[in-house]
Image (cartoon, rainbow, N blue to C red):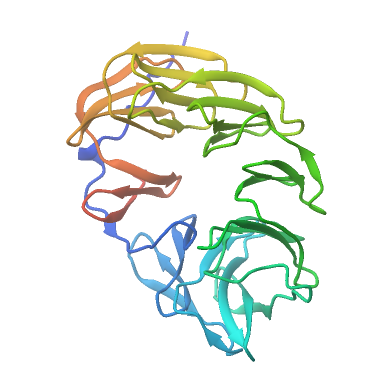
Length: 335
């Protein structure tokens, strides 16, 4: 019989050296596709950079439609591959959102429009984060100084379809989840309300969403109904969780525990004192501090490396990983 190959070992700090420095920005102002990163720049442009070399591949600007606000645009990609940039402008004394759609290969403009908002639904502040994008609409959310808001923008006519004073957490093809529950993506109608105030999102699966509740527990909710599927305590001051594709690893006062990301079923537990946890590929990195920690297989908690030198992996795909160690850098995949 052919022996089963040993799983590849987790990448450690020594494996993730020599990366190309990459200057990005705040959350929502950059997105990665393959070996390119699309970034909203401080001077109001959207640009593509080759992550392997750090070179700028193309830059694109919004058409001049008014006075642009002094902030970088937010950036996202659609499932069809288009690059989307969103900024705020003032035209004839009216505050508007301007949406730029670009070809990802060339940076050529596909569409550039001011979003229609005849009923004044959206209170324009900083450019909102694009929670989700598809061929039909965008889900945008932001937290301006005077209150939270979430909205859906219809792309065929560029109009804001609906808006609520709620902080958006997640979105899928059918619904938008805010801190007060789920709404229909199509028209904003209330679909379900939770039995507690939803906190931050810890992980997402196809049929469920894992959130923090007011008591600092992890709660698994059915996306369609809001029913609570499972619950796990997050005790200790430095509790945190990290998700891989199928497992959510959480720290408690007792150690680390792995849960099925979709159902919340407990898969394994390890006693120990760790300060933080991050996830990448099939691995959970358990940090003890000062760049040191242990690595376990997320699926079963089996120890893969002990007392190792670690580096925080921000993002990874088949082309490489983005690491954060004395600045952000892209390390190409070793093939």
